[in-house]
Length: 96
Image 1 (cartoon, helix red, strand yellow):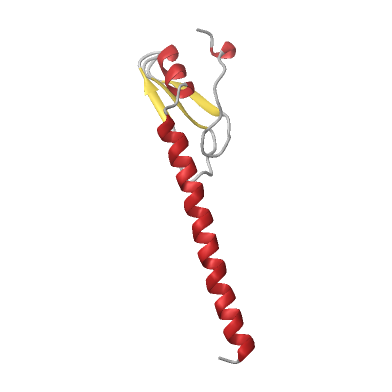
Image 2 (image 1 turned 90 degrees about the vertical axis):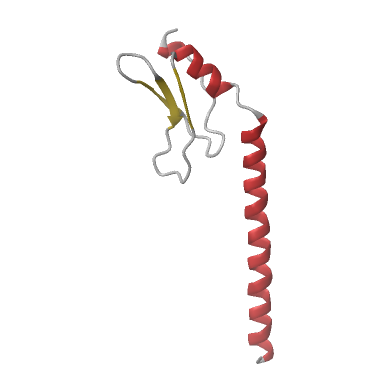
């Protein structure tokens, strides 16, 4: 398997292109999100390049479920924060 011929899916959390690192002359192989400023670490480590590529590209539904849950949590937190801000603004307008 030639690295230049490999198609890798983007990071499931930020959409960035992943990086491939072949340790100690090619084994193990690590594929990790290429976003160095991210607040997450997504990686797979396998004995061969082929195994690492398959593991990265054949993600389980757990990642998708986590991502959806994470997004839902953010939406819920934003909605709650909006309610708090609206309550504070209302109190200030009413002089309370």
